[in-house]
Amino acid sequence: MNWILLTNLVKRFNVQSLKYMEAGKRNLYIGVGLAVVSTIIWSGNFVIARGVSGKIPPMSTNFYRWITATILLLPFAFKSFLADKEKVFKNWKYFLSVSFTCILLFNSFVYIAGHHTTAINLALIGTTTSPVFTIVLSAIFLKEFIQPLRIAGLAICIAGIMILLSQGSIERLLAFRFSKGDWWILAGSFFFAVYNLLVKQKPRNISPITFLFVFFFMGAVMLAPFFIWEHRHSDPIIWNGQLVSIILYLGLGASLVAYLCWNEAILRIGSSRTALFGNLIPIFSTLEALLLLNEKIHPIHIVSGLLVIAGLFIANSRKANDLKQMAV
Image (cartoon, rainbow, N blue to C red; front, side, top):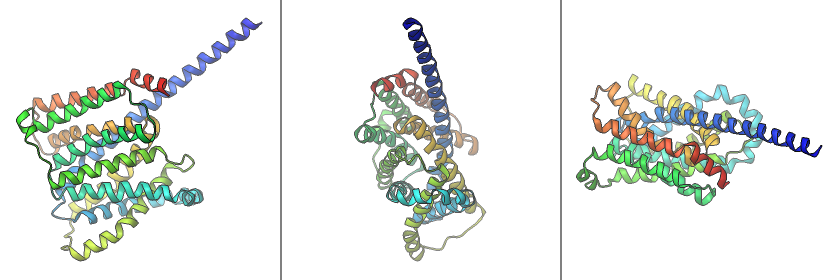
């Protein structure tokens, strides 16, 4: 009798373990897919930040982006917000923190940096430093275990980006110097890492749509005073169809769709792992230049891309995930 009971318990344990592993795999695949979608969309943001530098002031660009995202989301989030409003008011300090670090600081710094450095530097510096900041902060504040494979994967990703930055020339890499804009984007990447940690702490009982709506709205409100000041002290914006399309892209794609995917990826696979996928942004930016600007592909692009993909594969391998679970 005891043997039969023990056998049934073992079978039940194996079934539950199998279900847990399958759910873990599903979360991993979905999380990775969502993170990749976000990076594809965001890859154009650094190009835009540089491209509109002489047409729209930085704080105005940021304000128009988030007020557009808020307006577009309002019809879909209104009922959800009414249902969650008590929870939102209860967690107002949390929403203030995520909006402050990501919308007011990170994104403003990106657009300010776009007035002082190149789009390549924006993408490369932002994407290589933010995962490092995120992993270190996750280890300190969230007590996330950083196992060797995760560090090795990150190192390989950074090596791939450095090859792309230097075009394979050690002399060019050694000659690289931080400009004023580079420091702005470096500071911005730090605050994006802080945002990644905060999203991990998102209240579970608040729907994703409500979260984004309040996040967008509070960010736009905090930007409003800077927008008004800049509007009074800058040359008037000359609007045309291209600028309107850019603002719509930033509001709908780079804000609404990308952040919805990114936040869900963080909840599924963790902040430090999701942050690693930011290393894909320079690769996608290069591919977009090839497709849209008819630029030529060189072997250095292929080598850099393969290294980044290899680093991501190692950092997100099943063995790395198993080590993390063992640590927990």
